[in-house]
Image (cartoon, rainbow, N blue to C red; front, side, top):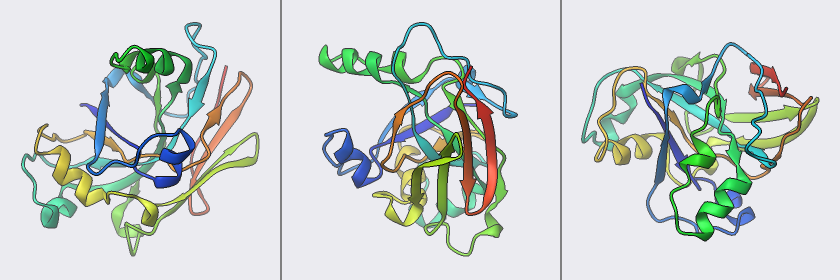
Length: 203
């Protein structure tokens, strides 16, 4: 199982980090050890002083595929979830300044909390899903999949040109604007519509 993450897939988020808006999907990966499940707490690592939350719709792949055409991409997932792409922003900035890869800032242990999944059939339009993040009961991020630069099906088609998709692979589809630092003691709750999909604490 692998975790494929899409960067800069919402224009407002690209702008808030002063990044150019991409013309093709940008993706990177996290290892399976990045997963944090079952609402277990996230323990703040001692190698960073600036961990940011990035709320993302997550797609779980349900069949093996490569070179998938966009019109068939909908057949490769039947569940929609919600997760956090934790980013050590200080490590990322240092790596970017040197032109180095920045897996060190994205792929660390438990950097990919994941909530429960919902059947795709729950949604009348995959590209019109409201989702949100509360921290300490205060809304921090709000998004809708209609604002994606690249749709879920476009992402699957593009990524599968380079990387074979396998059953159980997770695709984090990008974050809307509103990313910010988390602190020890924070409680994060993620929602699709009014339904809570995750609820965990920073320790």
